Length: 240
Image (cartoon, rainbow, N blue to C red; front, side, top):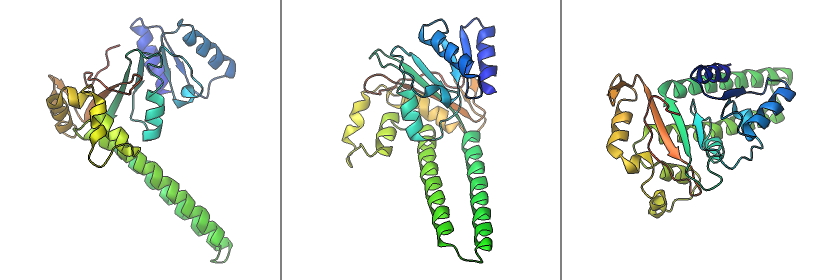
């Protein structure tokens, strides 16, 4: 799995890293969690399965190697950093291929739903309101998930305050945008808008950022402390 490959790469550079995913044996997962909790393992490269029930106050970094599937998921996962109130960083890597892959997977889900609906109606002789209701509920859930993912994409692709984008999604920004000042100038855009605008402009092209080829990728960093404020970090590569 990808998390295993990344863990091995970090280990090869001397970092005390390990991997964690749901397909591992329960006793191995328990041992790895204990090592990480006791700071024997300093970096845990994991799938979202690792995040459930984690209660470690001194997490300094939460790094998403690919864009989260929902804004709710991102908010919850990044919020695991800095629970002790000290400055902590959540880094998200986003590339346009993330959006394309999501759109492709959503189209497959729609095809499966339509096929299942057709099979159900054939079995019922063309009737079956219950099946129609199930199909409608499934479609509604997919629309909600897609809207949440699009909110993440918008946050990554637009040159604007990151905190404002998050608060807007959860309906916590007044119409006049007064709560935008809660960012306190710490997000990457508010701290250095020119850098963000350059990175965003290069996102779908072959431009360079800071002398580094973008090739359709951009990194957006967020600082997660007690007020979920944010900070700038270099795009494209990660420095741990």
